[in-house]
Length: 170
Image (cartoon, rainbow, N blue to C red; front, side):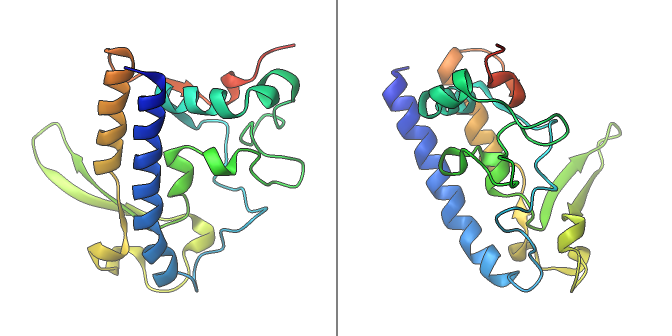
């Protein structure tokens, strides 16, 4: 697939995510502690689909070649003050961090259960388990969109990349 078309499709997904996140941020504004400098969720273990990694490489080549990653433990893209150096082009996972999350877990015996979670810093107020479904971010639909885009990107299985690995070793 044409790189420009891929970038356009990825940006469409990001715009859709951002549009759907806004009402949740408004609903939960009293409980959300997420703001510039809060980076408890920004950890080394985060990975992204290769199509998202390509987008970061495209927009932040100078940083990846000439800059230094944040020390291990925190996301490689944090600056010294704990702010994101790629915020405008941050991946999907970063666009939904901090919100009440819900997903369906399927167990080996075929049963399913809805699970929920929220950043411990945002756990004040109504218990996340008691929130209406519409007040939680549903994990699954956008991950599926990204997986399908990834398949069109390289034709293979969804391949994930560590954010730290994007920096060129000097």
